[in-house]
Image 1: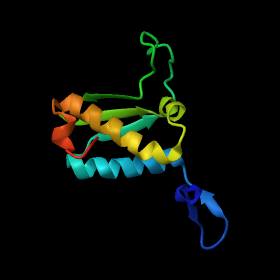
Image 2 (image 1 turned 90 degrees about the vertical axis):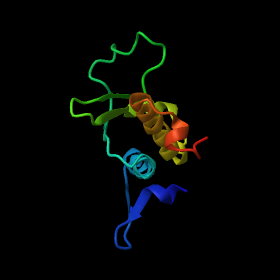
Image 3 (image 1 turned 120 degrees about the horizontal axis):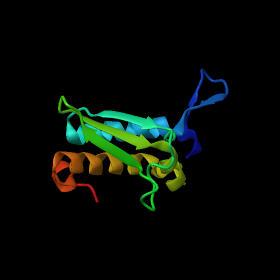
Image 4 (image 1 turned 90 degrees about the horizontal axis):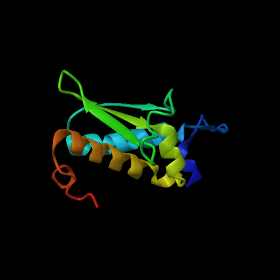
Length: 119
């Protein structure tokens, strides 16, 4: 499965693709297929101030909010996600789950309403 995250450059040696960005692209497509609305989705490698989340025992994987325009904005915390997800093949599913559950929480819908097949 290692070839899944690399692309061939015209028959020459493989150029590695950023696994997180590739997995996020897959998860975002799945998310758009289900939600049908575009959210502002970004990721940060690490927060500038690592103390802001230490009130909890667990670092956040995703945070979100609704902008003044009504658009949902989601921020994935890349380093925390990468520390948690060791198997890269599971990364698209984990990212999709994070996007879906945060969207549901922010919009007042249930996950089952958005994706009845989600388990």
